[in-house]
Image 1 (cartoon, protein in one colour):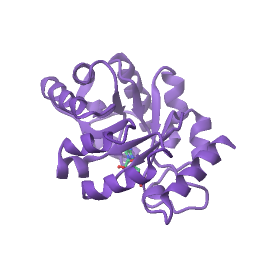
Image 2 (cartoon, rainbow, N blue to C red):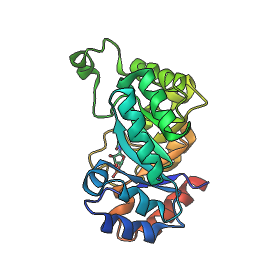
Image 3 (cartoon, helix red, strand yellow):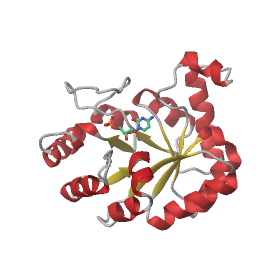
Image 4 (tube, helix red, strand yellow):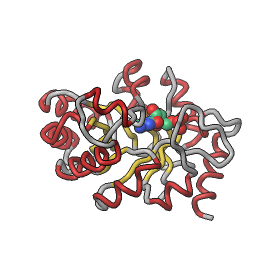
Length: 224
Ligand code: C5P
């Protein structure tokens, strides 16, 4: 299985769809994020799903269970294979998302990677970040989520806490390449050997001179 999910972070569906067409056959799936979803609506999911690869709708839902269930149903109907929800919505909300998605495909964002240890008390959380990630991983498993999204630094502790959950990891960079604004990066091979099931990769592929060749190199680097 090809573990690469390409983050199609573009302002227009036209640009996202053009790249998806180029990469089809070289990657395992596509991620549609908030920018495209807000700009183009569910048709962004429908169009990208038309390439026949699974679509990851990074909607980061966080609302009362009834609202989240209805939103997840719309996202599933548009053709998404996965949807993200925030752990802070609690168990009932995660279960509602699961029900809206048809009992599969919910991915829980444990703690945003932009949050640091010093931020946690300011949002009322009295815990170390690493412990909070593990606690939210257990919550995801209790809500029958399919997986969690976490940084490369957390893959081992998440897999250790709940080996049945799939791990989706952004912050992946080829060795020697720019980290952009990612703070905790790993190479594709490191992330997979730590236990990541899927690698969410945006700019290293989407901004490459030759996106197809870069995707091929990443696949080869994992296999080598
Ligand atoms: O371009 P880059 O490879 O950094 O893209 C990573 C993708 O993963 C982006 O779409 C970003 O929004 C997303 N993401 C992330 N960190 C998270 C969750 C999602 O970088 N914690």
